[in-house]
Image (cartoon, one colour):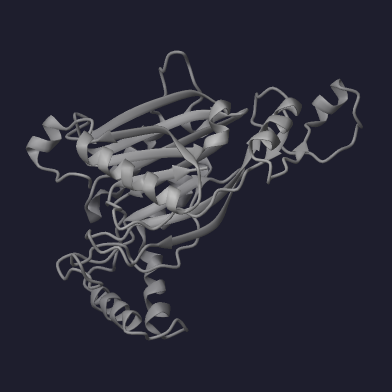
Amino acid sequence: EMVGLSAANIVMLQNGDEARQSHFEAEAQRALRAGGGDYVKVRGLGMVGIFLLVYVRAPLVPMIRDVRIARVRSGVYGAAGNKGTVAVRFELLQTSLCFFCVHLESGVQRNEQRMAQLADAFRCFEGAYPPVLAALQHDVCVVAGDLNIRLDLPKGSDADEHLRAALKTADSGGGGGVGSGEGAWRAFLQYDQLYASIPQHLKPVGMIEGPIAFPPTYRYVLGSDEHDSLRAPAWCDRVLYRAVGTRLREYRSVRDLRNSDHRPVAALLEATLLGGPSDKGVLEDAVPQRKASILFDEQELRSCGGPRSSPMTPVRAGAAPKAWAALVAPQEPPASSRWRHGTSVYRF
């Protein structure tokens, strides 16, 4: 978290600690500049201990419109922001994008409560005025943060001890083959509560997660690679995304950042930008090193006298016919020693 979740902070810092947020933002901008990119902040948004930053490349700024924000408080029966969600949505060309930073309820026995909080987060723009798309209707929708997912280990077994032993073997260089430490800890993903929730809670709304190839992100002894002996290891920190129109390029934990009892995770996603014929030139002028390939919807091709058979890309249900432009591919987020647990940074 950006701040400790004391009673005073929960009451006094409902929108987060502005001084710490400003400091983190400055560090994020410095890291982006060091990576050779010219980025501009679209919006930053905090709530108690969580903080969300969204950046775009500077040439794309004139193409952004209708930026909206939302906070969903899930703590103390919806009255407190120690748990909950912050969200930023906007449109880039004719593409709608929605990003979440979440911190859900903790505890092994509270998975259904976590899934209910996630469902509440997806309703965050209901009743907005002027109206905007529901979160799950956006062309690009990403959820990142501490989902607090736990493992349902068999009761009365020594599974927890076996998992800890597997993690120690992997950390000591036991390799990654079957029977090695890494191969052994992977077997414990079968007990992951989010995996078990996919059919009921994620698949129906079109959200997915990439394959997990990193060890549990919780709970570490501060400053070390050793898991806390008081809590069962778990993959608490996750990234989810809308299955249609988004492709996962990389999904990993950042294991060399040890200033939290969690290990942050990072995902590199590639999406598709929607745009009309006039947007192609705008995009190529803004980012000349990239070429925007436009695939027209068949109905639009017919209306402008184009061929009756052409490559087709499905459009959102109920959407007006529109063309599709290839994304200016995002680069990998830079690792920063200033990363704080409970912070999500998106950039394009």
